[in-house]
Length: 83
Image (cartoon, rainbow, N blue to C red):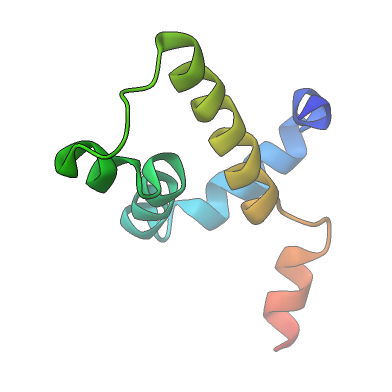
C-alpha cells in the first residue's frame, strides 16, 4: 500500500485516460471488491456489521487492490497500439 503514495502524476494521467473509457465497469468491479459477500451475509443475518474501523480498513485495502489491478505500465499505451 505504501507505493501508492508514489503513484505519480504521469501514471495518474495514464490511468485516468484508460479508466475514462469504461467507468461503469470499473465502478462495478470496485464495488464487488469492496463488498465481496458481506452484503449478502448482512442481508441473511449471518454476518456481523463491521465496525467503523474495520469498514475503513476494508475500504483502504480495496482501494490498494483496485489500483494494483489497474495500475498503468509505462508502455501500456505503446503496447495497445502495436496489437
